[in-house]
Image (cartoon, rainbow, N blue to C red; front, side, top):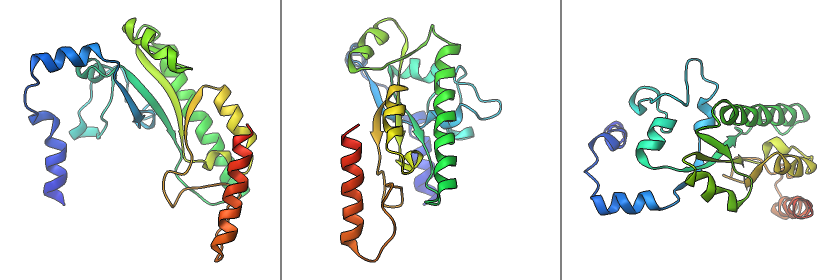
Length: 200
């Protein structure tokens, strides 16, 4: 396991030279990452998106200098909330955490409008990239911040979260679904919750 992890981390540093034709094609394409965990680093003490970091030192994979070097035009900056207890208090903490993480993303954009721009619709990405800026779509990973209040789905969407990955693993939350020995009851709760979301 240790050897495999070392090999993975060493990958970027030992990568072979990319052929010129491939580089030229890459530069012509609109390149977006569908899941960027970088927002988790934005609030770390002393860490700046504007500075180049080393994955071997802080395990981060994205910052502005590396985006420019790698030709990454932007992507979906994830508001990921770890799963916690399915209680009122737990839901409220998750909601507040997601809101603050979203604020951090927006502050990143506001602090450097010359390099970052918030994208709200699919058509926004190409013009932003053409202007030499990084595309910032906001996404929600895990339904936990919604708690049992489906109206928050609309709130976050208006706030610019256009991508939702609600159930991202079997350990994450689907509100209104409670642990039960009867699978049919779980599925019934899931169907009701999904129908409520579809009406938003």
